[in-house]
Amino acid sequence: MTDVQTTEVDPPWEGLTGAELHAACMQAAREGDRRAMDRLVAELTPLVWHVARANGLDRSVAEDVVQTVWLALFSQLGKLRDPKALAAWLITTTRREATHPFGRRVQPVPLSDEVAEAMPSTQPAPEDEAVRADRDRRVWRAFVRLPHRCQDLLRLTVLAGRAEYQLVAETLRMPRGSVGPTRGRCLDQMRDLLASEGGSR
Image (cartoon, rainbow, N blue to C red):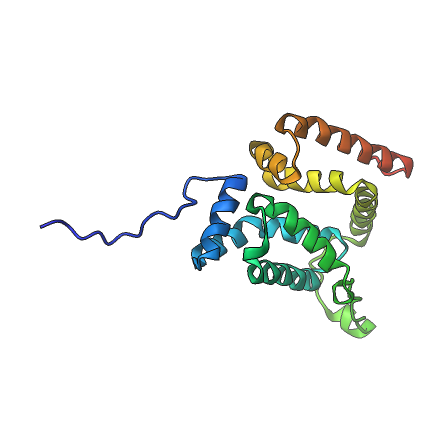
C-alpha cells in the first residue's frame, strides 16, 4: 500500500525571483490562489510604500494609498497585459493615487502648550532634528527634480539591491548592463542638484 501524500505541492513560484516570481504569482492569483496574492503583497509592498512616502504623504495617508493600490491591482488582475511589468505598474499607480485629494499631506493637530510640556520626549534634541529635517528636505527636493525614470531607477535599485539588477532592467525595460551606469549618472545629477542649493554635505 502506497503512502498517502499529505504535504502541499510546492507553489509554482518556488525558487523564482524578480520579474519571473511576479509573473508566476500573478498567474496563480488570477486562478484564486490566496498564497500568491500574499506573496506579491509581501514582496512589493516596500516598493509601493516608498513611492507613496516619496510623494510627501504622511504615514497614515501613505497606508491608505498602499491599500488602495493593492485593491486596484487585485480588482483587475486579468487586465494587466504583461505580468512582468508589475513593478512599473505599481510605481505608476501609486504615484497617481498619491496626487488625489485624499492623498495630500495631512496637517497635524496642534497640541496646547500645557499638554506639550507635560509629555515626555523620546525625540532627538531640537537642534539635531532641525539639521536632519533640513537635510531630508534638501535630498527630497533634489530627488523629485530628477527625471521620473531616474526616480524609478533609484527607488528600485535601493529596494532590490545589486543582486536584482535583472528585475530592475526588466521593470524599466532597459539592458541589464546599463542599470549600473545609468544609476551612477542619476546619482551624479542628484549630487549636482544638491550642490546647487548648498546641500551637498
